[in-house]
Image (cartoon, rainbow, N blue to C red):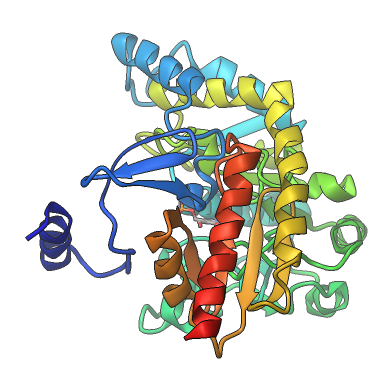
Length: 404
Ligand SMILES: Cc1ncc(COP(=O)(O)O)c(C=O)c1O
């Protein structure tokens, strides 16, 4: 039996089946390329769901982590440490916000956003006790905690995990009218993804973000942008909201903030909002730890150069132009922004999973979502040549399905 098969067998036997991985066992990775335990190389077109925007083993990020490992990894937040101030000030400057509340995973940051919005609602806006509601979107993906799945519309994510947390109103994504109809005096926030990643890289209609901003301002409710997947360079801007020049009241960040090294997440907001949190009211043992902050500081420095944002915009043009050429040749629709694409394929040809396997056989790792959609989000360090080669492999895989 091959090493790959042995490792897969043990993994399947000894771990919960909460994922359905492609049959590849990765051993190492650099830049946009990964190598499996058999020595076969693949081009990574998923980037840890955008956690690896700056590439596998990015030298600057790995260097910062190695330096920090020598000095200090954890203090708990009972004490200050010397990486924390730089992280909060740096991320505050990048987001244009006064304050940061660091956590670890994306879901924790979303939970934090929900808690802060409710507390702000009761203490600043003056909504009725226990009555705060938050407007969220159909087909959202914000993580896996019980509160977050309570407002998911995906049966897989939600079913049989009740009883559910109340206080959320689900409206159609992309419709500002739907939000307007759902708002009442107890609404504290609108929580949304500026591009819905897990739903298949769904880009809302032009002007939507601007209209949501205007509505939130007019109604005195918080606009909370979950930029965990869309933010930090992926779409060709620092934040996906930047495409409409819109500034939300709160950013929710994660994934790439940890440079593909450690889980780092945070919310960013001004003092009139985040100031509602006082000692003992929220926290996490590892949130804002020295290693996380050192890695985050390297990520912030990288983003401050603007190079990755520009590169994602430039390569995104190449990616989308090449993908559009495949429409009518097995591809039905292409969506996305920057180096991020959702590609719907003709369901009569193959499922997204079958296509992902065919791509894997050709040396490209991508992931299906919702039946016949695949997502492409390579590390932004990818070369143009490799990017074009990846789309060529997609064309080839689709052609093979059309012939069979
Ligand atoms: C938009 C968005 N929010 C939240 C999350 C949850 O992040 P995590 O898996 O780190 O909890 C994800 C993960 O895919 C996401 O895409």
